[in-house]
Amino acid sequence: MSIKKIRNEKFHPFIKSEGVFIGNGLSEPPTVKFIEKEKLWHENLEPRLRLFYHNTLSSTRRHANFMNVKSPRDSLDIILSSEYNHSDDLFRDKEEVFRQPETNDKETFRRLRNTQDIYINPPVYLSHPLKIGGISERKSIYSVKLINSGVHGSKTNHGYSRQNVDGNFFNY
Image (cartoon, rainbow, N blue to C red; front, side):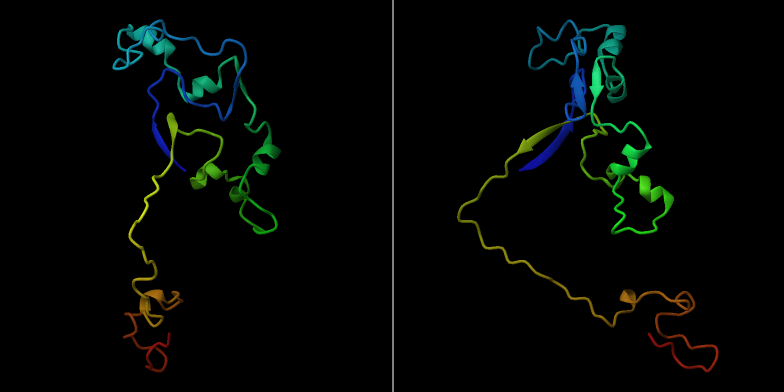
């Protein structure tokens, strides 16, 4: 099952994974109840009403009736929700301890853009042609591009330069 993200055209963001609304929730625009399929919710509204009823991700998270249950409350929660693992990553930099999964483009409960998720089941093709995978091109281990650069790497001309001391070719 794959997920396709499309732009959210509704007046409220799609943040059900972050928390819940207590009570009434967000107020609906007056035209939502009588909307047609081709029309958008904001077509016949005045600009001031369109601005009032359109909610961004930030304004919805700060709404009085929205209870954000998964967001971190203090620095300990931030460290616990980070990707840092003390067993694997010993003596990391200070900023890597606090780095969140969203920074590394991993999917979490927090929504970063006003999009909607559509779950798509991939079609199952019967009697499909056989696909053979594998490595199409093997890189030579003797290639200069695969060698780790050393101290003299910027001074060499891809194996054609000589050493200053005795005039021998550089050995990779």
